[in-house]
Image (tube, rainbow, N blue to C red; front, side, top):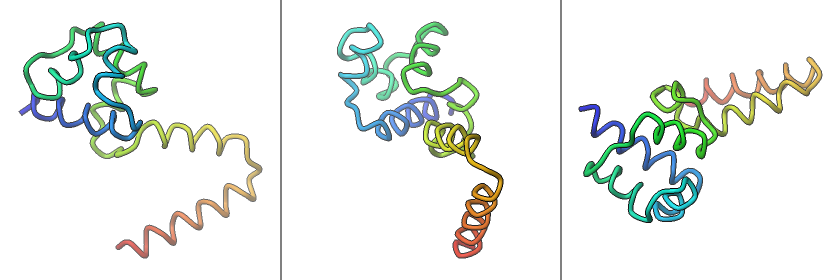
Length: 105
């Protein structure tokens, strides 16, 4: 169960960055098939390897396992941008998000 989740979540987050498994493997200092082997459930990273993966994806380990957060890197970026806006603009964005959520329901 966890092996499947881990492999699928890694593939999902990597694809959001629009990077190949080979590119990611090499970028974190591993052999070219490292990420592919994890995604195919043939191998799993050490704790240190997992931290490198999270760092590369610009997410925390908690965000990696948070299934309620489909795009953690983008949400973290959005929150950082929101912090720099005046309250009036934040209120507009919140209202827009609420309207979008209501439309979805």
